[in-house]
Length: 220
Image (cartoon, rainbow, N blue to C red; front, side, top):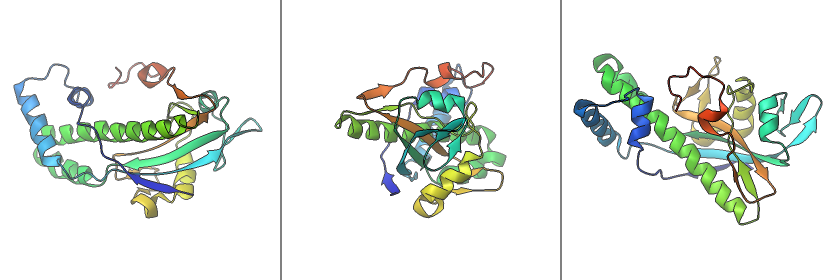
């Protein structure tokens, strides 16, 4: 059964926001603008996650994830040995989209910072949800793998349609998907992670180290 949770986020990671904004050596003006943007956004995010658990089993030339079949080799490696997976969709709400649109034309720098804040906040929400599930599963002697999203590696973006169908994202958390497979609100993520039979989180190869895109502007 699809469940919905609302989560509180830790304080914003200013270093990450500046990285997303491309500010490698921010000056006093950039730091002041960042603080002003964070103050304007304070209390206006709506952080929600809908999720469900599905069985994982080998299938012809791929994996049966319970809600969809995939031939992704990368996802098969991540879910190796897992009998279950957790599928989730997360969003921080529409307010950031409104602020980005409002300032995009009149104050591009401010719009850029709101884009960067949104990227950091949705990642923080995904991290908080995954940590919550990991803690719950650890009490039962189980663990989780790192999350993997459609469009990453060889997982097709088209899997989004299956995810939105089974999680009923529009009704559960107000998250929609258009014909181009773009989500609204834009600061949203769908992802999957495996459930293992050993306690702890298997983060081997997580983050930028796991990605083959060497020329990414956001690479750590």
